[in-house]
Amino acid sequence: MPAALSATEIDELRTETLAVCRGQRGAISGIEPSAAGEPDEVVVRRYACIHFPHKVSRLMHQMLAHPVVVSALTGVIGADVKAMQSMLFTKGEGKPDQAWHQDEFFIPTRDRSLTAAWIALDLINAAITMRPGPAAVSTAAAQAVRPSLSRDANRPPAH
Image 1: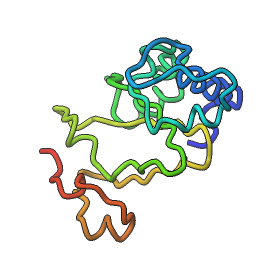
Image 2: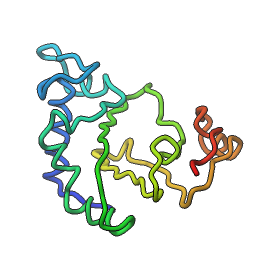
Image 3: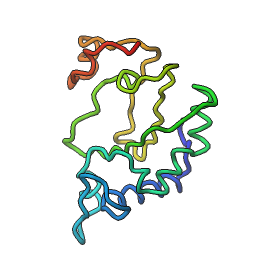
């Protein structure tokens, strides 16, 4: 959904990402306060992913219920939309990619309604590949697309 958030909202999220990565929004395991004068780019790219930033950031908590996100999700899975986690990917150069996986395998739901909503803050790492349906990804097929395949592709889909 291109332009789902305004330029102002994206700028606010970028600023908030920096504050979270600098440790200015409260304690998060593994996040160390940045040194005075440390460049923003260095601070943000230090981490690959920060789990549950909505617990320390009011803005990131609000994004979980952003009207555009809720509208898109209710259109896909129906009115019973729940947020169960947030993740802030700040993957810098040289950090590992997110492996091919099927979220439903790791977090099963009774009605197979688990859905992820991604908000790209830049175009450099904005690509995400989706495969419709509950199909398993074979190792050979996934390696042809992404050679850095992890063990996740060898796991069967959840039933």
